[in-house]
Image (cartoon, rainbow, N blue to C red; front, top):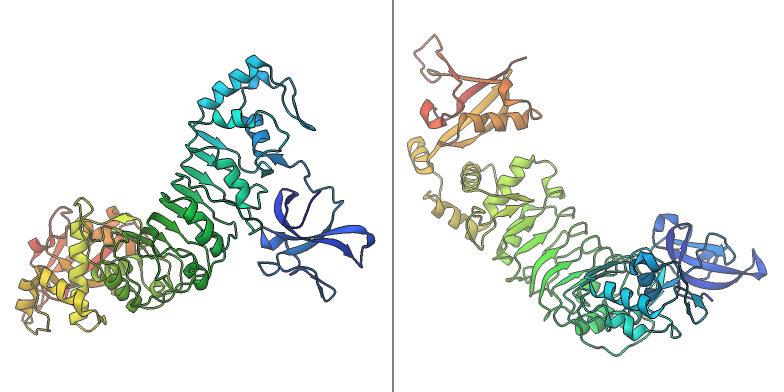
Length: 512
């Protein structure tokens, strides 16, 4: 018989029973279930009907009422052992039947049992997601100890999107499988229904995404049970800042912590021993100066609410060992192209070529960085700051930037000094039909082909083969009345070969 907080599947959709009883609209003889759908858009209310509250939903609008007699309710709930035998016992022996108590499963002969056990001994991975599993085994199921003992080599177990509602049920399964190193429980729902004795387990990777597990269950049960845990996935659990604080992970060492798809607004300050932190798809817009994560190597901040470049500068100061950063698709970059965003980020962090072993940033928004790209971005950024076109308040980073490229910290009016010190071509404007498409500094080692590649990106990735470039050699000769045109047609030449001046104009045409 179904009870409150039991998990059910209706029309292939998962839900939790939050209320069992009669409703005035259906009469006293009809039992109603008040349910909260896992997929909130299936819901119709918050557990209220005609002004009366029968239950509370965790997610606004995720509730519905159905009759207990609804034919779409799948009542064939299964145990872990039943599904293990059904899916992983050798196929040639599925014709006979066995009764586990009142449940009819498969019939074991001695030879058959030995062959099933031999098959189980070879298992290293078991996937039983979406199998209506609600508990580990029935008390009247036989040979349980023997069956579990044959899973001695099992390392991976997926029990995602089943009907499990209590962690003690899971512990009852995995405590019998000490070899397990990775456990996936995504899509179940865990309520604090019972307390069980914590028996430490050697699990290394635990997935609890979209389970709505509360922070106290993590703090009091999960971290204590798995002292050697390396990866913890908690995405999609509706966590807010207070919930993350209550996870109590200050002294927990993890290679990966996934908190994506939650409602976190500030980068947590209690995650001092995390090496990779996934915070994508949250509401993050702030970082505290007290947020020091000196062991963090990788952070994912995509699709948040970051509004200011000051956030980026604080991030640089607080994450001194960051080597991988994903931060695209934030409001601060909405008006920037990909290239401008990349330049801003490279210049504001200490970066290094990905081929070198380094503690500096070498992977940005999924792309590996190289030395030429880094130098070009830094020099261009320096030029913009010195021209007062970019505001940069991070004095620590600025000193490192100008020292790296041997550039005076302060402004200079000497064109010669500017060109010699920067080791680059001065500002060049690229025009198409009298419209400026690029205006920036270029390294003197930039090739013509790479220049065409930049132009191509500005023109919706038009083929570089269609681009033709030229400039006028005597553009800055005031005494000349006739301009001398020079075609830039050697793709492998470097820009330094052409003797460009400061503010040189390069003209672009497109062949049909």
